[in-house]
Length: 495
Image (tube, rainbow, N blue to C red):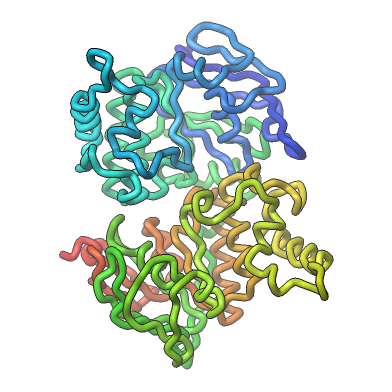
């Protein structure tokens, strides 16, 4: 008999207008790393939220550590040793690293909070992760990668029997991914069972023992990782074969002029960089976490203070706010969709049309018919999985939420789109749709600046690549047919 710590049988969960899980099955052995795979909306995160007590099941049975349950509440799951690191991080920006690690679990000595002990314990955990991070640093000052590490440290503090990781490598560099995988293997050796949710299929073969595929809320298949390959997993996930990871690159016209010139840009973590963007071009920005890539996009979007010149179509423009940028046709698809991109309690329709509401009046009233037509067009074009345009956006999967943000800027008819980690947390099938959309933007004469930590994506979609290191431009690659990962990494490390 297999040594299972967890068996979930015939699990069904429904939300308003959505059946998220329909008779789903999942089993986990003690001390294994088990990948849970599927497209966005397949039910992966919902199943894990059942396991952690966030979502309640309509029907089904959970066998955990030899006992039978019909569901958990949140505190019960924690007490049983079930811990989850969510795709969208749950940290308090104004608190320090150690305060977030011990939030709700503060150590006390003689009735008073033992700050010294918590700082030392936090430092010890951070050291086991193989990274350098000050326990006294505030979360708001950390990059997304290091915020992720704080979440992992907080989970390790609980000594979990089951650790669930939902897209943990999304904001991490290649070196940080290796550190994470080493940590996972050490936890596995200690008998911890890890459920690993990721759309980066190459990672599955690097760190996982077993994988289970879900599709449209249904269990499809469980297999040993050594007995399968990427093509088979993709076919199981999407229900069809996906032959090409990236669409054929559309060349930029030879006579294409510059739509954007950036001269001597300075901002937080950005130190005097200059570059240009041609009409109909995808310009990739490579670099390590903390190199100033995101800050460059935020400066161009007017989200952060900056100095330098921004020239569009030959004319110098002033961008002091996001509204200025939008008025000049420059928009940002942020990597932090829930924190900065969406109003989660509003509908899909409201989120898509928000920036263009002022232009959508007929007399004193909103043109609801026109809004409905445009929103439906975006839902269809981007293949957003939603019961209707009135669905509250919080109930959509991460990938579909990202598509809503993209739809917002397409409907605004912008001509320069800034993508910050455009496919972070998006499944393999939807990634191809985003890539195809980028090509369609090029065909329409629009231009894209893309920051990506996914090296194959950066090389597979960019026409040119510039590389930043510590806020300075350290490399430029213009031959799209011969991009070199080694050259990009050397520039990113400023070697």
